[in-house]
Length: 399
Ligand SMILES: Cc1cc2nc3c(=O)[nH]c(=O)nc-3n(C[C@H](O)[C@H](O)[C@H](O)COP(=O)(O)O)c2cc1C
Image (tube, rainbow, N blue to C red; front, side, top):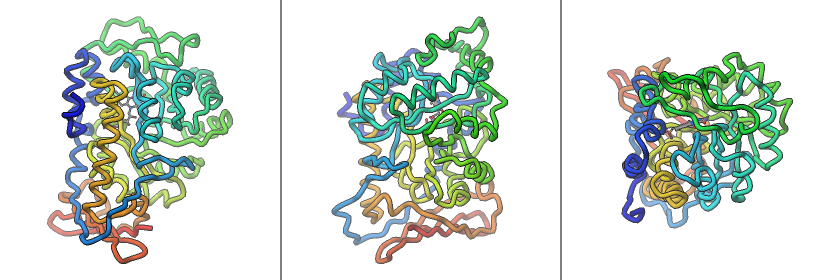
């Protein structure tokens, strides 16, 4: 029963029981050794919180603002494919849950409901995630339909010139159902009975030539702001700024694309620094607890996106399951803020200056301690100490 569930991770167990193996593996799996998949979670667990006490936390402000849209907490729904494999109501249930929680859902290009169906299912603010196929007319068609249907931003996924090698899907011979958004435009059937149909289909259709130059083309076909999802380095964050991205999503696709990329939380601060508060930086990958959200905010994210837990909630309990997942994360974040001595999630937005003797922090960090001090000051300091033999530190100033 949903009432008995006390943490987001429990939904994964229920989803496993509810779903056929092929679909569960598709949702849960990552690329190759699943190193990055695991690291996304583990790296959050290495960050330790140092609370401040005797702060009046009787009232805590959780809401934040993304591209001018206020959401109830800095926790959004990541774009994930084919929700109808998890639950018959698919993305319509997810979108209704997003509306009920007053948050933003990013609808996947590969959704099992169309942009129009999802837009008309509720009044939530929605963004549309785009893959660019070799057939560029498909992108033009979908972006323009999304804009006409009231989506507020385009999220360009940049980490998928080809599909990552997901071995569970290969073993299960994962089948791709007809993608709803592509009905009447192209068939998603693939003439192959070997390995993952999804991989064969993606590799036939994705445009591996997509490059920074194409952002100008994308801008020429839409008036919507464009966020770039899949940034993991300061170099690419700087490029994203140069081409006029309206936001950046630090993401490694939940460990499903290139394995052995760093955990997103460990590169967040580098990206935030490069962006310098010009546009919002969001993060996804491994967010399973309110404390994870808190850590991402403390390191400069404006909000986080949640991928698999939403699908697990959907698979287990439909719309109510997604609502429960989002509520649990929000409640845990609120409790974390109270116990850590913070009154506002916005105060956690920070611009950072790194003081470190390690050029490659993420390679050398052994232990990571996060100290948050904010009391009695108009601004706050977050100090992170990284220990491995010799000591280095990150000092961040909170606005
Ligand atoms: C089953 C599944 C399907 C996904 N489909 C998409 C997609 O269609 N487009 C996209 O940009 N990202 C996709 N992602 C990546 C998510 O947007 C997000 O980056 C990732 O799930 C975050 O990690 P988490 O699952 O640990 O929260 C998918 C992830 C999963 C698990």
